[in-house]
Image 1 (cartoon, rainbow, N blue to C red):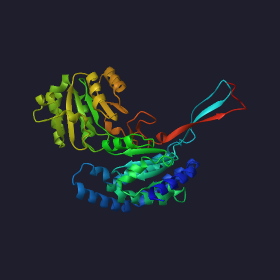
Image 2: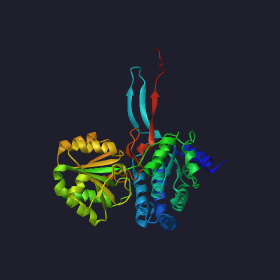
Image 3: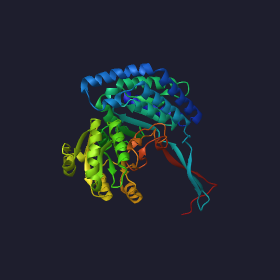
Image 4: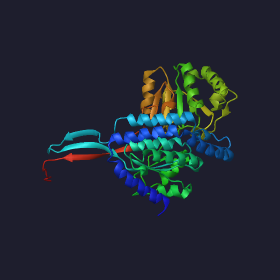
Length: 415
């Protein structure tokens, strides 16, 4: 029996036990995991340094390097996230709704775990921590397959997490596939009967590949060609602060801004201000012809630029004539992740938030808040950009499904 099938079977066996475990045991496991991360931070950071150094040798200044790095601050945040998850209300067994039929049947719609969840992801070893914690709290086992660039980090993390829960739960609820052959991913995509759900995290092309080739149910996550629209009546100081935050803070993450749309009525005044501020942070700016007529040193944006998810300090700016045109552009080029409008006009704000096709729509706030921890979930499995089952940041409730429990008193159906 090969590693993939063996670990999938171990995860499923452990899940049967976990799905029956009371919340106090799952909470205890999460608290142990949190403590273990803090106590073993040096070991994790040492493993991460190996991955980071190898990444630098092979890819030099690739903007995705930031996603790979685990330092003491990020580990502390991850450990605190596990504590927050442990303290959330138990989702398992929650009665979502209930009613009595005309036949006297009492029907309850009850929240239950999904089962064994496969997660395929690139870089970001913190994902290993977040997903393991959310899975255990929601009563699910996980089969993790991280990228080769984070192998040492992921192995160290999983070894520590498994060891920390072995006296509370079956440690096989957390499994990691160490084989970095791409063939393993292809096999996971078709592991029906072993996996109940597959969640990919990574580049847009990687997620598309998983979606197109999987037979296991998939939740599509992540790609973030996100926009901020500055309306004609916007507070320009607020707009600049929000755009700088959304572009500069962590440009490689999926909730960063890639495009800015500016209303034509303020373009002459605002574009020079915005361009000047962005350049202070080393942002490379592209724009359409109308933008370049105002700011001559801006690079001309090509047609394909409007569909690109810039992972570095690159930003494209376009002038639009109305909120309707802004929404039309976003719905054509966006990835249904996070979109924002900066405005003092309630009608335009309502039009934007209702008509933009995205998981998260913002009014006068940075799109960087699209994050499970920021939403109060403790952490997240990913940002779902699809519309079925889960949409937006995925916490413990998004890792559950429902079943109907029906109580009767001997009723039989007559027709």
